[in-house]
Length: 227
Image (cartoon, rainbow, N blue to C red; front, side, top):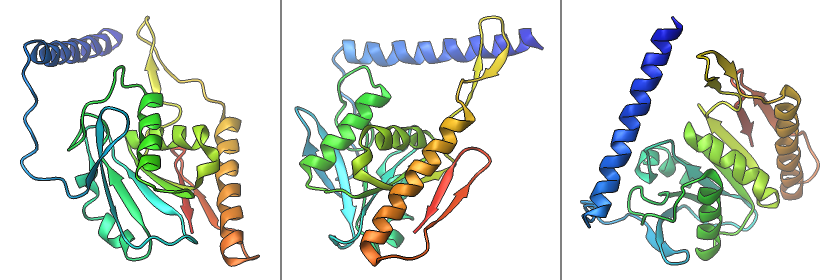
């Protein structure tokens, strides 16, 4: 069983490495990536030598937070095309393309979580999108919005995780065994309480004293904040 898992792991690793070499060779030979077949629905914002695509809809209201949509791995702003119009009926909502995805230019390497979060923060600042923010992260985007919230806590008043990446994923060790990544349950609970507290404070500032927002903790560690 262990040998079978190791074989699958090595096969996937080799495939990813081959894909990396292929993409690297394309750049090395000076082949420019094909331009998108359609013009961007939003605008391209220069964040320091490269541009990111930002698409904001809905009316801006100083008394309400702006909703930021973060797509999953390999996805971009278009993935929210059925969600964004509905949210825009009651709030200002923005989707965007990470560097190298959709209509955005490729950003600096390495493409770490911290780099991507920094670029989103810079994008919002350059585009004049002021906090408070409600972050919505799908799948891989869930890790990014968690990091954004911990890096810029004063900007974030709410977070919605949609089938988000687990904060304690399985990891394969060198001996073939699989274990959970180290993440204390108390840390997750603290994160839930911290976000809930910030949402409650923003809610009270907006509508005055009243019942606190409902917090729904999913078994996977996802948190749904209902405002």
